[in-house]
Image (cartoon, rainbow, N blue to C red; front, top):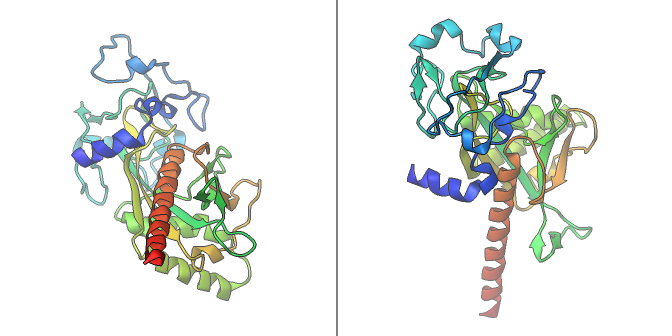
Length: 305
């Protein structure tokens, strides 16, 4: 837990210390408004006698599809437990359960129920951050402002038009590792053109890089507009970097303005992305540029010997 909080202190900006997107109205895919909250009214340990959040569970969740919890089963659910059948209900941060209802560990959101989220408590996702260096016409790493320029694969979400990492939910019984590879394949490689042989060759190259394990960027709570008092998003974000441009660098993604577009996008600290993805990208840029600088310094020292 100490390592988790240490990372949080560097990951969250002061504005993010209290969730913001999890309090936005109207709630996604609806016209339902949350009860307005000030930053000071968010923490559960701050008295708020008049707190009366609107209850909302989207019809798509209330219909009880296979990926959603059944409300009648809630009294039997093993909250704060990694193995409730095939469902992982454990959070990076322990949460309270009041009257058989899990409570968002990051505070009030102005809404109870599950909204668009299928599981009571944490809803686990995986976000692959697939990167390569931008290269100039001589196939050299592009340098701007003294730093190498990173490109990352983004998808344009069909529900709100925002650019996001090509991630998705971890299905019951699945692992984060398999989900990272699967979601990238489903959301980013679906656009490959040039025949089955070319697609298989590229997927084989991608599989090799994913099997490397990647660089762990973040694991924990996500400030997501779908969050409620009783259901919230948590994710594991892992960076898979193609240093030479011979693996991911050959993926023929096409930029575009259509819904569902996929593209290599020049990454920057100022990017505005879905949920907490901007923070994951900033941390990835920092780590990659730091690693690059260390390798260049080591190479320089070797050359001087």
